[in-house]
Length: 570
Image (cartoon, rainbow, N blue to C red; front, side):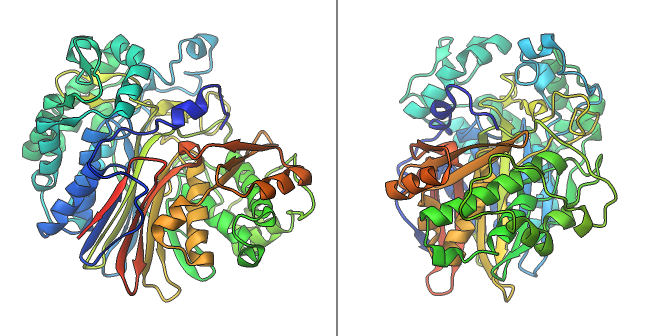
Protein backbone atom coordinates (compact mmCIF):
# COMPACT_ATOMS: atom_id res chain seq x y z
CA UNK A 1 0.00 0.00 0.00
CA UNK A 2 1.23 3.48 -0.79
CA UNK A 3 0.94 5.96 2.05
CA UNK A 4 -0.66 9.15 0.79
CA UNK A 5 -1.15 12.56 2.32
CA UNK A 6 -3.94 12.53 4.84
CA UNK A 7 -3.60 8.76 5.40
CA UNK A 8 -2.88 8.95 9.10
CA UNK A 9 -5.71 11.39 9.73
CA UNK A 10 -8.00 8.99 7.92
CA UNK A 11 -7.05 5.91 9.89
CA UNK A 12 -7.37 7.77 13.18
CA UNK A 13 -11.08 8.03 12.52
CA UNK A 14 -11.35 4.45 11.38
CA UNK A 15 -14.74 3.57 12.75
CA UNK A 16 -18.09 4.84 13.87
CA UNK A 17 -19.43 4.08 17.28
CA UNK A 18 -21.00 5.11 20.55
CA UNK A 19 -21.73 3.31 23.76
CA UNK A 20 -21.58 3.51 27.51
CA UNK A 21 -18.33 1.55 27.62
CA UNK A 22 -15.09 2.46 25.90
CA UNK A 23 -12.25 0.47 24.38
CA UNK A 24 -9.02 -0.11 26.21
CA UNK A 25 -10.67 -1.17 29.48
CA UNK A 26 -8.67 -4.36 29.73
CA UNK A 27 -9.53 -8.01 29.52
CA UNK A 28 -13.09 -9.30 29.95
CA UNK A 29 -13.74 -12.85 31.17
CA UNK A 30 -16.87 -14.99 30.91
CA UNK A 31 -17.91 -18.64 31.12
CA UNK A 32 -20.93 -18.98 28.83
CA UNK A 33 -20.17 -16.88 25.78
CA UNK A 34 -18.10 -13.99 24.48
CA UNK A 35 -18.35 -11.47 21.64
CA UNK A 36 -15.58 -9.04 20.77
CA UNK A 37 -16.43 -6.55 18.03
CA UNK A 38 -15.57 -3.00 17.02
CA UNK A 39 -18.72 -1.57 18.61
CA UNK A 40 -20.27 -2.24 22.02
CA UNK A 41 -23.84 -2.26 20.70
CA UNK A 42 -22.94 -4.93 18.15
CA UNK A 43 -21.19 -7.02 20.80
CA UNK A 44 -24.29 -6.78 22.98
CA UNK A 45 -26.47 -7.85 20.04
CA UNK A 46 -24.44 -11.03 19.73
CA UNK A 47 -24.58 -11.76 23.45
CA UNK A 48 -28.36 -11.24 23.37
CA UNK A 49 -28.62 -14.06 20.81
CA UNK A 50 -26.32 -16.30 22.85
CA UNK A 51 -28.48 -15.75 25.92
CA UNK A 52 -31.55 -16.75 23.91
CA UNK A 53 -29.94 -20.11 23.19
CA UNK A 54 -28.30 -19.37 19.85
CA UNK A 55 -24.86 -20.69 19.01
CA UNK A 56 -21.77 -18.74 17.95
CA UNK A 57 -22.83 -18.67 14.29
CA UNK A 58 -26.28 -17.31 15.14
CA UNK A 59 -24.60 -14.64 17.27
CA UNK A 60 -22.06 -13.86 14.56
CA UNK A 61 -24.81 -13.05 12.05
CA UNK A 62 -26.52 -10.85 14.65
CA UNK A 63 -23.22 -9.02 15.22
CA UNK A 64 -22.61 -8.55 11.50
CA UNK A 65 -26.11 -7.14 10.95
CA UNK A 66 -25.81 -4.86 13.99
CA UNK A 67 -22.45 -3.56 12.73
CA UNK A 68 -24.23 -2.67 9.47
CA UNK A 69 -26.40 -0.34 11.56
CA UNK A 70 -23.84 1.18 13.95
CA UNK A 71 -20.86 1.19 11.53
CA UNK A 72 -22.52 1.94 8.17
CA UNK A 73 -19.21 3.31 6.89
CA UNK A 74 -17.36 0.03 7.36
CA UNK A 75 -19.38 -3.06 6.46
CA UNK A 76 -22.82 -4.39 5.72
CA UNK A 77 -25.31 -5.63 3.15
CA UNK A 78 -23.70 -3.65 0.35
CA UNK A 79 -20.37 -5.45 0.76
CA UNK A 80 -18.89 -8.85 1.56
CA UNK A 81 -16.32 -10.70 3.60
CA UNK A 82 -15.04 -13.96 5.06
CA UNK A 83 -16.01 -16.07 8.07
CA UNK A 84 -13.82 -18.76 9.64
CA UNK A 85 -15.95 -21.23 11.60
CA UNK A 86 -14.75 -23.91 13.99
CA UNK A 87 -17.66 -26.12 15.03
CA UNK A 88 -17.91 -27.90 18.37
CA UNK A 89 -17.41 -31.25 16.62
CA UNK A 90 -14.03 -30.16 15.24
CA UNK A 91 -14.82 -29.06 11.69
CA UNK A 92 -13.13 -25.87 10.43
CA UNK A 93 -14.31 -24.09 7.30
CA UNK A 94 -13.88 -20.69 5.68
CA UNK A 95 -17.03 -19.21 4.16
CA UNK A 96 -16.17 -16.83 1.32
CA UNK A 97 -18.85 -14.25 0.53
CA UNK A 98 -16.44 -11.79 -1.04
CA UNK A 99 -17.93 -9.55 -3.75
CA UNK A 100 -17.53 -10.41 -7.44
CA UNK A 101 -16.98 -8.29 -10.53
CA UNK A 102 -20.12 -7.69 -12.64
CA UNK A 103 -20.50 -9.51 -15.95
CA UNK A 104 -19.88 -6.22 -17.76
CA UNK A 105 -16.35 -5.96 -16.34
CA UNK A 106 -13.33 -5.78 -18.63
CA UNK A 107 -9.63 -5.99 -17.83
CA UNK A 108 -8.97 -2.45 -19.02
CA UNK A 109 -12.00 -0.74 -17.47
CA UNK A 110 -9.87 1.34 -15.08
CA UNK A 111 -6.75 1.67 -17.24
CA UNK A 112 -7.58 4.89 -19.09
CA UNK A 113 -6.62 8.37 -17.96
CA UNK A 114 -10.32 9.23 -17.98
CA UNK A 115 -11.01 6.40 -15.53
CA UNK A 116 -8.18 7.45 -13.24
CA UNK A 117 -9.09 11.12 -13.33
CA UNK A 118 -12.75 10.32 -12.72
CA UNK A 119 -11.91 7.90 -9.87
CA UNK A 120 -14.13 5.30 -11.47
CA UNK A 121 -12.76 2.50 -9.27
CA UNK A 122 -13.63 4.20 -5.97
CA UNK A 123 -16.71 6.36 -6.62
CA UNK A 124 -20.06 5.80 -8.23
CA UNK A 125 -21.59 2.82 -9.96
CA UNK A 126 -18.52 1.59 -11.85
CA UNK A 127 -16.80 0.91 -8.53
CA UNK A 128 -19.55 -1.37 -7.19
CA UNK A 129 -18.95 -5.12 -7.16
CA UNK A 130 -21.78 -7.62 -6.69
CA UNK A 131 -22.40 -7.81 -2.91
CA UNK A 132 -22.04 -11.17 -1.17
CA UNK A 133 -22.83 -10.25 2.43
CA UNK A 134 -26.53 -11.17 2.44
CA UNK A 135 -25.91 -14.51 0.72
CA UNK A 136 -23.13 -15.20 3.20
CA UNK A 137 -25.28 -14.54 6.25
CA UNK A 138 -28.08 -16.79 5.02
CA UNK A 139 -25.57 -19.48 4.06
CA UNK A 140 -23.88 -19.72 7.46
CA UNK A 141 -27.22 -19.67 9.29
CA UNK A 142 -28.61 -22.48 7.15
CA UNK A 143 -25.46 -24.63 7.40
CA UNK A 144 -24.20 -23.94 10.91
CA UNK A 145 -26.78 -21.90 12.83
CA UNK A 146 -29.81 -22.88 14.87
CA UNK A 147 -32.00 -19.78 14.57
CA UNK A 148 -33.84 -18.04 11.75
CA UNK A 149 -32.70 -14.87 10.03
CA UNK A 150 -35.68 -13.07 11.54
CA UNK A 151 -34.57 -14.01 15.03
CA UNK A 152 -30.93 -12.95 14.67
CA UNK A 153 -31.85 -9.78 12.75
CA UNK A 154 -34.11 -8.43 15.49
CA UNK A 155 -31.36 -6.68 17.51
CA UNK A 156 -30.21 -4.86 14.35
CA UNK A 157 -33.80 -3.94 13.46
CA UNK A 158 -34.27 -2.48 16.94
CA UNK A 159 -31.04 -0.47 16.64
CA UNK A 160 -32.05 0.85 13.22
CA UNK A 161 -35.56 1.83 14.32
CA UNK A 162 -34.83 3.20 17.80
CA UNK A 163 -31.49 4.68 16.84
CA UNK A 164 -28.46 5.64 18.89
CA UNK A 165 -26.59 8.86 19.60
CA UNK A 166 -24.12 9.95 16.97
CA UNK A 167 -20.56 10.07 18.28
CA UNK A 168 -18.27 13.01 17.35
CA UNK A 169 -16.00 10.57 15.51
CA UNK A 170 -19.02 9.43 13.52
CA UNK A 171 -19.92 13.00 12.65
CA UNK A 172 -16.34 13.59 11.46
CA UNK A 173 -16.43 10.64 9.08
CA UNK A 174 -19.80 11.72 7.67
CA UNK A 175 -18.46 15.25 7.24
CA UNK A 176 -15.35 13.95 5.46
CA UNK A 177 -17.50 11.89 3.09
CA UNK A 178 -20.28 14.44 2.67
CA UNK A 179 -19.44 15.42 -0.89
CA UNK A 180 -19.38 11.81 -2.07
CA UNK A 181 -22.66 10.88 -0.38
CA UNK A 182 -24.36 14.08 -1.56
CA UNK A 183 -23.20 13.52 -5.15
CA UNK A 184 -24.79 10.09 -5.59
CA UNK A 185 -27.87 10.45 -3.39
CA UNK A 186 -30.65 12.89 -2.62
CA UNK A 187 -29.23 14.69 0.45
CA UNK A 188 -32.74 14.94 1.91
CA UNK A 189 -32.92 11.16 2.02
CA UNK A 190 -29.47 10.29 3.37
CA UNK A 191 -30.05 9.11 6.97
CA UNK A 192 -26.65 10.41 8.07
CA UNK A 193 -27.65 13.97 7.12
CA UNK A 194 -29.94 16.40 8.91
CA UNK A 195 -31.48 19.18 6.84
CA UNK A 196 -29.22 18.13 3.99
CA UNK A 197 -26.01 18.50 6.02
CA UNK A 198 -23.92 16.08 8.13
CA UNK A 199 -25.83 15.06 11.24
CA UNK A 200 -24.38 16.76 14.34
CA UNK A 201 -22.83 14.71 17.12
CA UNK A 202 -25.26 13.93 19.90
CA UNK A 203 -28.25 13.52 17.58
CA UNK A 204 -30.04 10.19 17.50
CA UNK A 205 -29.41 8.39 14.20
CA UNK A 206 -32.29 6.22 13.04
CA UNK A 207 -32.33 4.22 9.80
CA UNK A 208 -35.92 3.19 9.05
CA UNK A 209 -35.13 2.16 5.47
CA UNK A 210 -32.44 -0.22 6.68
CA UNK A 211 -34.85 -1.65 9.25
CA UNK A 212 -37.39 -2.16 6.46
CA UNK A 213 -34.82 -4.06 4.41
CA UNK A 214 -34.01 -6.35 7.31
CA UNK A 215 -37.73 -7.03 7.81
CA UNK A 216 -38.17 -7.88 4.13
CA UNK A 217 -35.24 -10.28 4.25
CA UNK A 218 -36.62 -11.79 7.46
CA UNK A 219 -39.93 -12.51 5.73
CA UNK A 220 -38.93 -13.27 2.14
CA UNK A 221 -35.36 -14.57 2.43
CA UNK A 222 -32.28 -13.76 0.40
CA UNK A 223 -34.28 -14.00 -2.82
CA UNK A 224 -35.62 -10.52 -2.13
CA UNK A 225 -32.06 -9.24 -2.40
CA UNK A 226 -30.73 -11.33 -5.29
CA UNK A 227 -33.86 -11.57 -7.37
CA UNK A 228 -36.56 -9.36 -5.89
CA UNK A 229 -37.41 -5.73 -5.18
CA UNK A 230 -34.28 -4.95 -3.17
CA UNK A 231 -32.06 -6.29 -5.93
CA UNK A 232 -33.97 -4.40 -8.61
CA UNK A 233 -33.54 -1.16 -6.67
CA UNK A 234 -29.85 -1.94 -6.16
CA UNK A 235 -29.27 -2.45 -9.88
CA UNK A 236 -31.10 0.78 -10.70
CA UNK A 237 -28.96 2.69 -8.19
CA UNK A 238 -25.70 1.29 -9.61
CA UNK A 239 -26.67 2.04 -13.21
CA UNK A 240 -28.04 5.50 -12.41
CA UNK A 241 -24.63 6.39 -10.98
CA UNK A 242 -22.61 5.28 -14.00
CA UNK A 243 -22.29 1.52 -13.50
CA UNK A 244 -23.42 -1.40 -15.60
CA UNK A 245 -24.95 -4.13 -13.45
CA UNK A 246 -27.89 -6.44 -14.14
CA UNK A 247 -30.20 -8.75 -12.23
CA UNK A 248 -28.26 -11.57 -13.87
CA UNK A 249 -25.23 -10.48 -11.84
CA UNK A 250 -27.16 -10.78 -8.59
CA UNK A 251 -28.81 -14.07 -9.49
CA UNK A 252 -25.43 -15.56 -10.44
CA UNK A 253 -23.76 -14.77 -7.11
CA UNK A 254 -22.62 -17.82 -5.11
CA UNK A 255 -21.12 -18.23 -1.66
CA UNK A 256 -18.10 -20.56 -1.63
CA UNK A 257 -17.02 -22.78 1.24
CA UNK A 258 -13.24 -23.19 1.21
CA UNK A 259 -10.68 -25.29 2.97
CA UNK A 260 -8.81 -23.02 5.38
CA UNK A 261 -5.16 -22.23 4.93
CA UNK A 262 -3.42 -24.26 7.62
CA UNK A 263 -0.18 -23.55 9.39
CA UNK A 264 1.48 -23.96 12.75
CA UNK A 265 3.51 -21.70 15.01
CA UNK A 266 5.48 -23.34 17.82
CA UNK A 267 3.06 -26.25 17.48
CA UNK A 268 -0.11 -24.15 17.72
CA UNK A 269 -2.48 -24.89 14.84
CA UNK A 270 -3.59 -21.92 12.75
CA UNK A 271 -6.62 -21.88 10.43
CA UNK A 272 -7.25 -18.82 8.28
CA UNK A 273 -8.49 -17.51 4.95
CA UNK A 274 -7.34 -18.79 1.55
CA UNK A 275 -7.53 -16.77 -1.70
CA UNK A 276 -9.29 -14.63 -2.79
CA UNK A 277 -7.85 -13.42 0.52
CA UNK A 278 -4.09 -13.30 0.76
CA UNK A 279 -4.40 -12.96 4.53
CA UNK A 280 -4.25 -16.51 5.85
CA UNK A 281 -1.50 -17.59 3.47
CA UNK A 282 0.82 -14.79 4.49
CA UNK A 283 0.00 -14.97 8.19
CA UNK A 284 1.18 -18.59 7.94
CA UNK A 285 4.23 -17.66 5.87
CA UNK A 286 5.28 -14.83 8.20
CA UNK A 287 4.95 -16.99 11.30
CA UNK A 288 6.77 -19.86 9.58
CA UNK A 289 9.72 -17.59 8.80
CA UNK A 290 9.85 -16.15 12.32
CA UNK A 291 9.67 -19.64 13.82
CA UNK A 292 13.26 -20.05 12.62
CA UNK A 293 14.41 -17.41 15.11
CA UNK A 294 14.48 -17.40 18.94
CA UNK A 295 11.96 -14.58 19.15
CA UNK A 296 11.31 -15.00 22.88
CA UNK A 297 15.02 -14.84 23.64
CA UNK A 298 15.38 -11.69 21.53
CA UNK A 299 12.98 -9.98 23.95
CA UNK A 300 9.63 -8.49 22.96
CA UNK A 301 9.91 -5.40 20.72
CA UNK A 302 13.67 -5.14 21.21
CA UNK A 303 15.73 -3.80 18.32
CA UNK A 304 16.81 -7.32 17.29
CA UNK A 305 13.26 -8.65 17.57
CA UNK A 306 11.83 -5.83 15.46
CA UNK A 307 14.63 -6.07 12.89
CA UNK A 308 13.98 -9.75 12.24
CA UNK A 309 10.23 -9.17 12.09
CA UNK A 310 10.55 -6.23 9.68
CA UNK A 311 12.82 -8.19 7.35
CA UNK A 312 10.39 -11.13 7.39
CA UNK A 313 7.49 -8.80 6.60
CA UNK A 314 9.33 -7.57 3.51
CA UNK A 315 9.72 -11.13 2.27
CA UNK A 316 6.07 -12.05 2.63
CA UNK A 317 4.83 -8.81 1.05
CA UNK A 318 7.13 -9.37 -1.95
CA UNK A 319 5.59 -12.84 -2.35
CA UNK A 320 2.08 -11.45 -1.93
CA UNK A 321 2.64 -8.97 -4.74
CA UNK A 322 3.84 -11.65 -7.12
CA UNK A 323 1.71 -14.70 -6.49
CA UNK A 324 -1.67 -13.95 -4.93
CA UNK A 325 -4.91 -13.88 -6.92
CA UNK A 326 -8.37 -15.45 -7.17
CA UNK A 327 -7.72 -19.19 -7.50
CA UNK A 328 -10.77 -19.57 -9.73
CA UNK A 329 -8.76 -17.72 -12.38
CA UNK A 330 -5.12 -18.32 -11.42
CA UNK A 331 -2.96 -21.10 -10.01
CA UNK A 332 -1.51 -19.89 -6.69
CA UNK A 333 1.31 -21.81 -4.90
CA UNK A 334 -0.47 -21.93 -1.55
CA UNK A 335 1.28 -25.13 -0.44
CA UNK A 336 4.64 -23.64 -1.31
CA UNK A 337 4.00 -20.31 0.37
CA UNK A 338 2.89 -22.04 3.58
CA UNK A 339 5.65 -24.68 3.51
CA UNK A 340 8.00 -24.89 6.50
CA UNK A 341 10.87 -25.78 4.15
CA UNK A 342 10.19 -22.71 2.00
CA UNK A 343 10.03 -20.55 5.11
CA UNK A 344 13.39 -21.89 6.28
CA UNK A 345 14.86 -20.93 2.92
CA UNK A 346 13.32 -17.47 3.18
CA UNK A 347 14.65 -17.10 6.74
CA UNK A 348 18.18 -17.61 5.46
CA UNK A 349 17.80 -14.36 3.49
CA UNK A 350 17.53 -12.35 6.71
CA UNK A 351 20.80 -10.78 7.84
CA UNK A 352 20.96 -9.73 11.50
CA UNK A 353 23.38 -6.94 10.60
CA UNK A 354 21.95 -5.61 7.34
CA UNK A 355 18.69 -4.10 6.14
CA UNK A 356 17.34 -5.30 2.80
CA UNK A 357 16.47 -2.41 0.49
CA UNK A 358 15.78 -4.54 -2.61
CA UNK A 359 13.47 -7.46 -1.87
CA UNK A 360 12.63 -9.77 -4.74
CA UNK A 361 10.00 -12.49 -4.31
CA UNK A 362 11.10 -15.98 -3.37
CA UNK A 363 10.33 -19.09 -5.42
CA UNK A 364 7.74 -21.24 -3.63
CA UNK A 365 6.94 -23.39 -6.66
CA UNK A 366 9.52 -26.13 -5.92
CA UNK A 367 7.67 -26.56 -2.61
CA UNK A 368 4.28 -26.72 -4.37
CA UNK A 369 2.63 -28.99 -6.90
CA UNK A 370 2.10 -26.10 -9.30
CA UNK A 371 3.71 -25.64 -12.69
CA UNK A 372 3.86 -21.89 -13.33
CA UNK A 373 4.01 -18.55 -11.60
CA UNK A 374 1.93 -15.41 -12.00
CA UNK A 375 2.23 -11.79 -11.07
CA UNK A 376 -0.42 -9.82 -9.20
CA UNK A 377 0.66 -6.21 -8.81
CA UNK A 378 -1.23 -3.24 -7.49
CA UNK A 379 -3.73 -4.98 -5.24
CA UNK A 380 -4.87 -3.69 -1.88
CA UNK A 381 -7.83 -3.71 0.44
CA UNK A 382 -8.88 -0.46 2.08
CA UNK A 383 -9.25 0.39 5.70
CA UNK A 384 -13.00 0.68 6.22
CA UNK A 385 -13.50 -2.86 7.49
CA UNK A 386 -14.82 -4.55 10.63
CA UNK A 387 -13.65 -7.75 12.31
CA UNK A 388 -15.14 -9.64 15.23
CA UNK A 389 -14.94 -12.91 17.16
CA UNK A 390 -17.62 -15.01 18.85
CA UNK A 391 -17.38 -18.09 21.10
CA UNK A 392 -20.15 -20.05 22.80
CA UNK A 393 -20.20 -22.50 25.70
CA UNK A 394 -20.68 -25.48 23.33
CA UNK A 395 -17.27 -24.95 21.76
CA UNK A 396 -18.26 -23.25 18.50
CA UNK A 397 -15.94 -20.43 17.41
CA UNK A 398 -16.37 -17.76 14.73
CA UNK A 399 -13.91 -15.20 13.42
CA UNK A 400 -15.33 -12.90 10.74
CA UNK A 401 -14.20 -9.87 8.77
CA UNK A 402 -16.53 -7.79 6.58
CA UNK A 403 -15.99 -4.69 4.47
CA UNK A 404 -17.36 -2.21 1.94
CA UNK A 405 -13.81 -0.95 1.18
CA UNK A 406 -13.46 2.86 1.49
CA UNK A 407 -15.47 4.84 4.04
CA UNK A 408 -19.09 4.64 2.89
CA UNK A 409 -17.91 2.58 -0.08
CA UNK A 410 -18.81 3.95 -3.49
CA UNK A 411 -21.00 6.65 -1.96
CA UNK A 412 -24.01 5.09 -3.70
CA UNK A 413 -26.97 4.13 -1.53
CA UNK A 414 -29.99 2.08 -2.57
CA UNK A 415 -32.99 4.46 -2.39
CA UNK A 416 -35.69 3.30 -0.02
CA UNK A 417 -33.58 0.48 1.43
CA UNK A 418 -30.74 2.21 3.30
CA UNK A 419 -27.95 0.03 1.87
CA UNK A 420 -24.51 1.61 1.35
CA UNK A 421 -22.85 -0.01 -1.67
CA UNK A 422 -19.20 -1.06 -1.77
CA UNK A 423 -16.39 0.16 -4.02
CA UNK A 424 -14.57 -3.18 -4.08
CA UNK A 425 -13.74 -2.87 -7.77
CA UNK A 426 -10.79 -0.79 -6.59
CA UNK A 427 -9.27 -3.96 -5.12
CA UNK A 428 -8.59 -5.13 -8.65
CA UNK A 429 -5.49 -3.99 -10.51
CA UNK A 430 -5.78 -1.11 -12.96
CA UNK A 431 -3.21 -2.90 -15.14
CA UNK A 432 -5.07 -5.00 -17.76
CA UNK A 433 -2.03 -7.31 -17.97
CA UNK A 434 -2.30 -8.26 -14.31
CA UNK A 435 -3.96 -11.54 -13.36
CA UNK A 436 -5.94 -9.42 -10.93
CA UNK A 437 -7.39 -7.17 -13.59
CA UNK A 438 -11.20 -7.14 -13.48
CA UNK A 439 -13.00 -10.03 -15.16
CA UNK A 440 -16.65 -11.14 -14.97
CA UNK A 441 -17.27 -13.08 -11.78
CA UNK A 442 -13.77 -12.62 -10.38
CA UNK A 443 -13.28 -11.90 -6.68
CA UNK A 444 -10.88 -9.07 -5.85
CA UNK A 445 -7.87 -9.91 -3.71
CA UNK A 446 -8.12 -9.12 -0.01
CA UNK A 447 -5.98 -9.17 3.14
CA UNK A 448 -8.82 -10.13 5.48
CA UNK A 449 -7.58 -12.78 7.93
CA UNK A 450 -10.21 -14.01 10.39
CA UNK A 451 -8.21 -16.70 12.16
CA UNK A 452 -8.84 -19.55 14.59
CA UNK A 453 -5.92 -21.00 16.57
CA UNK A 454 -5.91 -24.36 18.36
CA UNK A 455 -3.46 -25.72 20.90
CA UNK A 456 -0.92 -28.34 19.78
CA UNK A 457 -3.38 -30.89 21.18
CA UNK A 458 -6.19 -29.52 19.01
CA UNK A 459 -8.19 -27.67 21.66
CA UNK A 460 -9.60 -24.15 21.12
CA UNK A 461 -6.99 -21.51 21.92
CA UNK A 462 -7.72 -18.21 20.19
CA UNK A 463 -9.92 -16.42 17.69
CA UNK A 464 -8.56 -13.20 16.21
CA UNK A 465 -9.01 -10.88 13.24
CA UNK A 466 -8.35 -7.28 12.31
CA UNK A 467 -9.20 -4.40 10.02
CA UNK A 468 -6.57 -2.35 8.25
CA UNK A 469 -5.86 -3.52 4.68
CA UNK A 470 -2.42 -5.12 4.32
CA UNK A 471 -1.72 -4.32 7.97
CA UNK A 472 -4.26 -7.01 8.87
CA UNK A 473 -1.64 -9.66 8.14
CA UNK A 474 1.02 -8.13 10.36
CA UNK A 475 -1.41 -7.22 13.16
CA UNK A 476 -2.83 -10.75 13.40
CA UNK A 477 0.65 -12.30 13.29
CA UNK A 478 2.08 -10.04 15.98
CA UNK A 479 -0.91 -10.70 18.25
CA UNK A 480 -0.53 -14.47 17.88
CA UNK A 481 3.17 -14.19 18.74
CA UNK A 482 2.41 -12.01 21.76
CA UNK A 483 0.21 -14.77 23.17
CA UNK A 484 2.22 -17.84 22.14
CA UNK A 485 5.74 -16.54 22.77
CA UNK A 486 5.09 -14.26 25.73
CA UNK A 487 1.95 -15.62 27.40
CA UNK A 488 0.00 -12.37 27.17
CA UNK A 489 -3.73 -12.09 27.79
CA UNK A 490 -5.97 -11.25 24.84
CA UNK A 491 -6.29 -7.54 25.51
CA UNK A 492 -2.61 -7.15 26.43
CA UNK A 493 -1.59 -8.90 23.21
CA UNK A 494 -3.81 -6.60 21.15
CA UNK A 495 -2.65 -3.42 22.90
CA UNK A 496 1.08 -3.94 22.32
CA UNK A 497 2.76 -1.48 19.95
CA UNK A 498 3.24 -2.87 16.43
CA UNK A 499 5.36 -2.37 13.33
CA UNK A 500 4.67 -2.61 9.63
CA UNK A 501 7.12 -2.84 6.71
CA UNK A 502 5.81 -3.12 3.16
CA UNK A 503 7.53 -3.90 -0.15
CA UNK A 504 6.31 -2.34 -3.39
CA UNK A 505 7.83 -3.16 -6.75
CA UNK A 506 10.70 -4.96 -4.98
CA UNK A 507 11.58 -1.74 -3.16
CA UNK A 508 11.45 -1.93 0.62
CA UNK A 509 9.32 0.75 2.18
CA UNK A 510 9.99 2.56 5.42
CA UNK A 511 9.64 0.78 8.73
CA UNK A 512 6.52 2.19 10.37
CA UNK A 513 6.72 1.91 14.16
CA UNK A 514 3.95 2.66 16.60
CA UNK A 515 4.26 4.96 19.56
CA UNK A 516 5.00 2.91 22.66
CA UNK A 517 8.06 1.09 21.34
CA UNK A 518 11.25 1.82 23.30
CA UNK A 519 12.93 4.90 21.71
CA UNK A 520 16.34 3.26 22.22
CA UNK A 521 15.22 0.25 20.15
CA UNK A 522 14.08 2.58 17.37
CA UNK A 523 17.41 4.39 17.49
CA UNK A 524 19.27 1.09 17.10
CA UNK A 525 17.04 0.18 14.15
CA UNK A 526 17.98 3.48 12.53
CA UNK A 527 21.66 2.73 13.05
CA UNK A 528 21.17 -0.68 11.42
CA UNK A 529 19.86 1.08 8.33
CA UNK A 530 16.08 1.08 8.71
CA UNK A 531 14.26 4.26 7.76
CA UNK A 532 12.00 4.41 10.79
CA UNK A 533 8.80 6.45 10.84
CA UNK A 534 7.21 6.77 14.26
CA UNK A 535 3.42 7.00 14.20
CA UNK A 536 0.85 7.59 16.94
CA UNK A 537 -1.07 4.63 18.28
CA UNK A 538 -3.92 4.44 15.78
CA UNK A 539 -5.59 2.38 13.10
CA UNK A 540 -2.54 2.70 10.85
CA UNK A 541 -1.32 -0.54 12.43
CA UNK A 542 -4.61 -2.43 12.15
CA UNK A 543 -7.44 -2.70 14.67
CA UNK A 544 -8.05 -6.12 16.16
CA UNK A 545 -10.64 -8.01 18.18
CA UNK A 546 -10.12 -11.43 19.70
CA UNK A 547 -10.99 -14.14 22.20
CA UNK A 548 -8.51 -16.28 24.12
CA UNK A 549 -9.51 -19.56 25.77
CA UNK A 550 -8.05 -19.40 29.28
CA UNK A 551 -8.21 -22.84 30.96
CA UNK A 552 -8.65 -21.24 34.38
CA UNK A 553 -10.55 -17.99 33.87
CA UNK A 554 -12.67 -19.00 30.88
CA UNK A 555 -13.31 -16.99 27.71
CA UNK A 556 -11.00 -13.96 27.60
CA UNK A 557 -12.17 -11.15 25.30
CA UNK A 558 -10.00 -8.29 24.15
CA UNK A 559 -10.78 -5.27 21.97
CA UNK A 560 -8.47 -2.73 20.38
CA UNK A 561 -8.27 0.72 21.95
CA UNK A 562 -7.19 1.96 18.52
CA UNK A 563 -10.90 1.58 17.81
CA UNK A 564 -14.09 1.91 19.85
CA UNK A 565 -14.66 -1.82 20.24
CA UNK A 566 -15.76 -3.55 23.45
CA UNK A 567 -15.81 -7.27 24.33
CA UNK A 568 -19.00 -8.43 26.04
CA UNK A 569 -19.49 -11.80 27.73
CA UNK A 570 -21.82 -13.56 30.14
